[in-house]
Image (cartoon, rainbow, N blue to C red; front, top):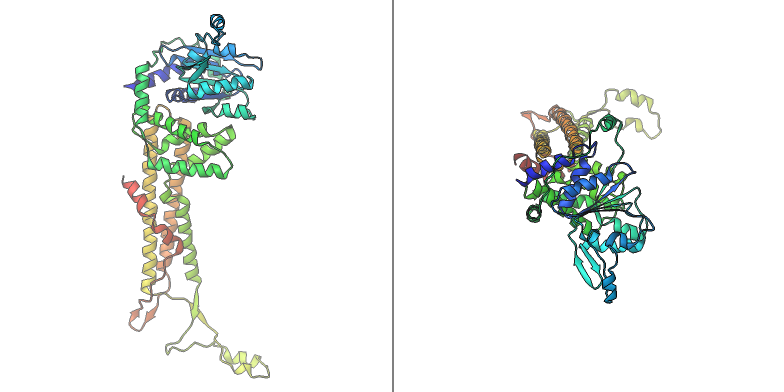
Length: 476
């Protein structure tokens, strides 16, 4: 029921906007999770309109909006001082109609204010509390939408910047959407019944019960190490808040567990700029759907190891013995003796003039074929995993309120490209198998000789431990 309400709400909120669907959805998701959103972009890109629309998503709340400058004074945000309170020796403000009593607030040019105001805002944004004289008031604040053209680099600004879980780039409308922008009709006037306090608490309770799946947890750990290696610092507090946002995304979609594909939200939570967000999105597209037990690169290394082993065995030579077990000597031994004139009689020494291609016993060839068949089974199982992931991704696009269609298209293209690579590796395995089958065989008087079993190829041996997991995931 709540999912249908949210879907209808999003449709109304996106009405009359061009290329702002993702920003609208993420800002609403952040507000449902009790988090703040920072919109980064030039003036005139509908940032204030987005905040006003977000206010309509919540029934019965108050909206507050203010443009900050370096001359902004606390009274503009927190309310004027109470004269009657001053006469009674109390330092209190009239907060009615100001930020301490707002549910949704829009603060434009949020980093232009002085450090004293930013420090006061820190407590309000993080704790939802405001010190009004000797009394600490509990604020009904759901979410603050901040807007800025640039990201700060001073200590106070960075601390305030960290309070915004979602950082969204808002760019001017593209050339493709420009015609739609110019043909827009009147501003939004469709009735928009917002969520009431009971519905919001139901969603928050459902989100608190959502668990973090093992696959999602593993990928979060991998990404944390990846960011550390790239000198990108992410605080523990931010990681915890990210999980809360993912829980709300899953709960509002009617699920009780955070899955891998929920992690598409991470670039907008972790990156401080567009370039870093793009790098994180690239990493996610390459890793989502590709479990740690069956990485494509690992399978490729094993295929290459078999090809290298086949080449080595095809080119190996052994000493050539005749039927009596003696080394064969060259046919031109006499001619060589005539050409050797050393004084020590070297021309009379026996010389081996012939080697032959190495030959292999039945057990050797059979062992290689068994190893290759096991590799082909792993590749087949992993192809099944990818097929399942593509179906899950398509289901996610159809069922999720929040997922970005552009990200889904990119991730699906990545999975399809990997499937094509797997098919080529299967063909290479088949060629290697044919090569091992064609190796020269050891023959005795009574037919083929068994010989000895070879040691497993090192890369294939390392792959053995991971071969069962992909099959289980494909079966599931």
